[in-house]
Image (tube, rainbow, N blue to C red; front, side, top):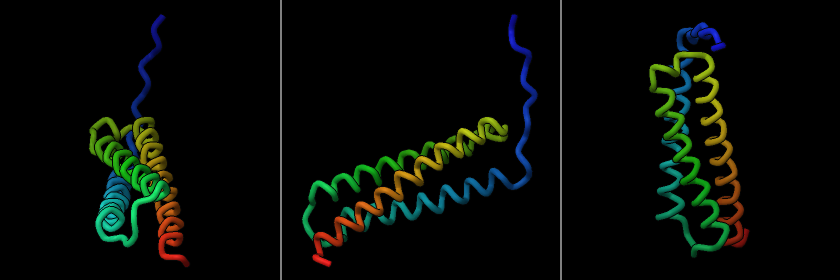
Length: 112
């Protein structure tokens, strides 16, 4: 027997616009931080700076996936929207870890 079709539950008005705005704000910060971290930060590359950069690039990739998902018509469904929120959450988590590692590495490089 096949499963009956699930009733599609659309999102309340404004939810998609909100997540798209949140993703683009975080993506803008991430790209600016990547520019600073790779081109303008003082000091030499170390193992921790490379790890921070790799995590930052991963976070940007996850943010782009979350943005792409949020722009899809199918994302107007609650289940798909929840998946998009997970992608966004993991991107924010990777970004936060990257920034913390970068701050600790910069502190070490500058001798604070």
